[in-house]
Length: 143
Image 1 (cartoon, rainbow, N blue to C red):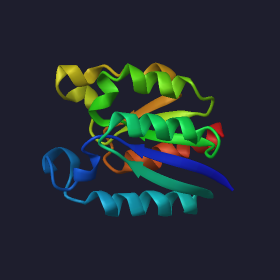
Image 2 (cartoon, rainbow, N blue to C red; image 1 turned 45 degrees about the vertical axis):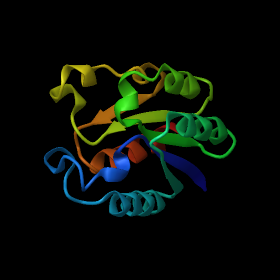
Image 3 (cartoon, rainbow, N blue to C red; image 1 turned 30 degrees about the vertical axis):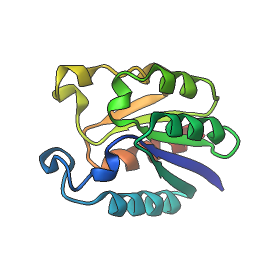
């Protein structure tokens, strides 16, 4: 069975609590359970890892190359400035799909640029929790 990792960056543990008009009212743990269930229904095993610390995310990416067939990543604000995260993604040869629950291109100007997009196979943004499900479907065709 193919195995995927869903990486969640800073503040994504606060979904359902913060900025409900942008991220909705459903809590992070409920969405994580649905991601795992959706992956299973799609024929994959999935793990979800969330951290508010850039180094923890980088370490998880480095270890992913030996364990996972693909990665869905919502790097949160790190998307827009973390060259270290970008370099970690580029260092391993498995497909990454960048995900955002909100439409980052319809938000503040600083959110319009992703430094990780060039090392990901694609980007999905603006579909709420469904962005994760769409990313899993995209990986299905790539793995």
